[in-house]
Length: 157
Image (cartoon, rainbow, N blue to C red):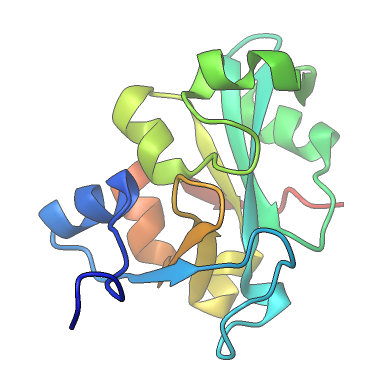
């Protein structure tokens, strides 16, 4: 394989490789949102960063086509209320810009609670951000949850 056609590994890829965790590194056209042929939109999950009134930062992961129930997430996480971290504060809180937040990288730097919507467990695998705009990873849902010490719960509306 020539040097130019090889995909550069993201930090997330490197962390997973070092841990011996099987995953697929994906390139997504950031401008068009065009996905590789074998990826369906309903398999893609977004990583949302919120603040709880009792716990502080908390991470919720839901299908990209769904809406987060802040009420459900608050209850499950032991908070009375949770709200999205303002975009201007996102990078200093999680270490990532909007669109690049990912559970693997966040767990490496912070011990924030991570809750993944239970539909990911039913699907068996999921696609999440790879830590850079236009990069994603496909990974077994339970393997990801175990690695980042996440729990599964119904957190979508």
